Length: 246
Image (cartoon, rainbow, N blue to C red):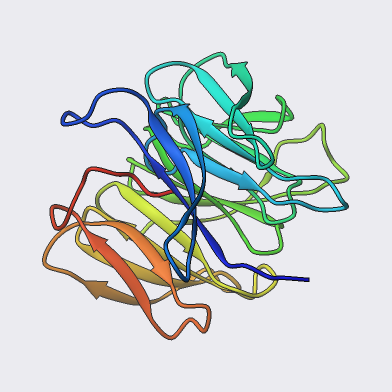
């Protein structure tokens, strides 16, 4: 079997470009464009991937920024597979690594999971980012209200709302990104980035703040090395802003 490393990149229209954005698949070694999926205008944290499993092909979800529609794409075809009309526009979406849960946030601070599996008022301002822990046992949500909520998920209790676990509330301005480290919940670490110029590292087991990294400007995006020894951040206002990452 030939193994290939790929990277997915989602771009949205900007003031300098016309037409819709795209989701592109590139060979990470050569940079070669392998596939392109068009007719999308998803912004930051509004594209998610459900991996292939049990012989079934995976798919991509893209919440449209300008309308209450969720686009669905199959890996096997470069055409739009499905358009799902939503009750309201989404501000972010996420799919857990197992492909079991899909969660979406709104500008009103609500979170919905699955096909109306559950919906609840998680924040009092816009939900900016959603992340599942690596084992899919918990969902973390960041918001413009500066808080990060951690909720427990239970496959056996589909009629109940996710149970609150804790709130990580040390930021003073909107939260822009969350990264969950490796390890079974709650024995994992979490990074959170905010407009308050800080990145904070948390230990979820005791729900405690481990350390704070201060930067000269607000942090908009995070990436964490698999060994959890180094993290990278995008400082708001630096670099090219023509595209939006996943």
